[in-house]
Image 1 (cartoon, rainbow, N blue to C red):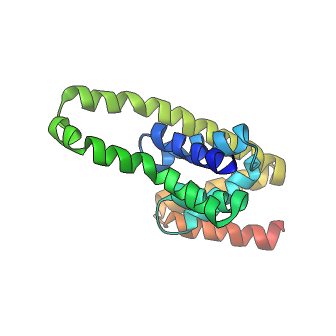
Image 2: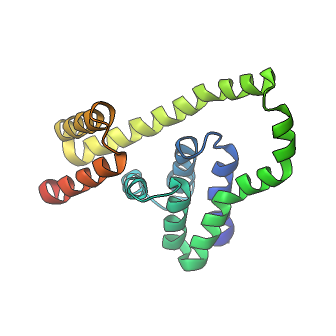
Length: 176
């Protein structure tokens, strides 16, 4: 039963997470934190941070880790396959259809209407992470780390992996 739950927990966000990682991460969080209770919000944010420091698609890395934690190597394989299965199935089944109508105004409009939903999902996840950080380290640390991260990524153009790694080092030294 655990393998079916793992498969479904990552297959469903793969189907509904139009737009890749940013859109599917809140859906994965809903499944593994809220629905199955495999991780807390804090643990999920740590897995997300760690996954962001590694190269490659974030959802597959998170799926592999969470699947392994729940059911070992087979759980990791099931979760990783479930993450890529929707894209694989859709690519094989619909590639010719999508290529035929990719310039259609209806298709373009449809993707435009999905964006606000993705923005709301990301906003909810951001709120959850901020509230979790506030509870763990307080408003001052959360605000300072958030502002420094924003400046480094948006103004100085430092790669997010380096900012996340720096935050991990900071946390290990000063907040541990």
